Image 1 (cartoon, rainbow, N blue to C red):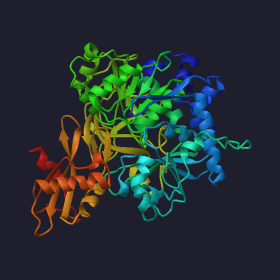
Image 2 (image 1 turned 135 degrees about the vertical axis):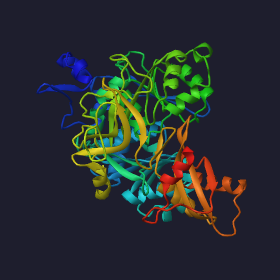
Image 3 (image 1 turned 90 degrees about the vertical axis):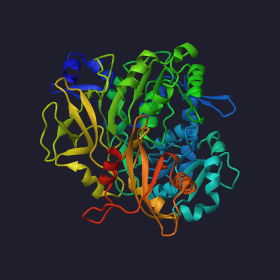
Image 4 (image 1 turned 120 degrees about the vertical axis):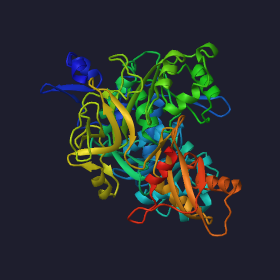
Length: 553
């Protein structure tokens, strides 16, 4: 499909979306000195757009604060200068725990100027999940906010033994005040130390089907490698003069950060953000208020918006493009977005380790409701059977891509064994099953492992099981993803209770709260079923496949 479309494009047209023609093939153009700063804020500063709007932050009281690209750049330099004075520089890990606030975006640019690596940490994390990430990577510096840090302050020494410096926005404690640092004068002698395409830029913790969340390293090349697919799933409209971007997706993960925030700045467009919780009425008001034109929304979020039947009649919306991913987009949801919300809705597919493999672009080729789309340009996407052999069109197989894929990660942090598990000969496996039709469109069929995808989040059962086992009432537990029409799947826990403990509604609520507070709200089981015993595998493990089969009856 990409050859049919892009072979007729001129060199300049290809370059406009980050592609290049090489030996007759269409490839993604990634320069060796590529750096996220140079592709985003740096590009705007170089173009003389110091005063162009970069960010609008809607505070809880409804007031707004504004940053230009010049403001972002100056504050990033001030923060980078301060961090260097504290001894941080090239290759160091800097934890970012500041939520969907301007401080997060500024800190990313500061980390780029240091040549350091940003550890993206969601404020949805409970203390156990945050401790796991920080202790695994052994970051010595954390940047946070008073609201997020205050509950952790008294126990920080035991929870995070590797931390040396914690900078806190609007601190009421003794930590350095990030808010003051950002507006301070940078050292006049400060010189940025920008790194290149294959140097580590981001460390993201994301769940797999076994064990605790793994640290995934991405180089600065990641944004350049995403540029063509970003251009396509935003429907070749990122250069619209009135474009304004927003997404409720957390900036600690790919969807919010690499599919929305950085792409908007790459295009020189403003990003609007707020800390309000997702509620359909608020979202519509917010998008109308700020004239949002482009957004990334998980399919679950779109379904919630669909509870408003005719939003164009009720709200003065400027929205015209939704890109969506993280879970399969139902044909009914696509139809609602197009006909009721009256927007273009392009689905795309990938995973944090190797992303943007497949997707849609309504401006170039027709979408087929229920399909993931076609292979994006620069990507070789195949379907193989259990032996690694290509399957014929119309047959189900696992999605794989060559180990040389342009969007691939640098590797798991300190986990070569996990890197090896991802390989299938010369290919990277996804554990996702699909069927490809004769025209090259892919149709998602489900997972081949235990990973749970729910409402755009992905999580492994092992970490939830481990958290529940820490509760005195739990003797054994098995966690699965149960199919759900609205969320794709939900977390369901099967629990054998400790002798003498009665399973009642109060205990169910207590166990859900336990996971919510220790790990994260989205990892808390939506359903809990008490069982007398479990079917075990030959190796003595709880048979999750048997549990999933129970839910299919």
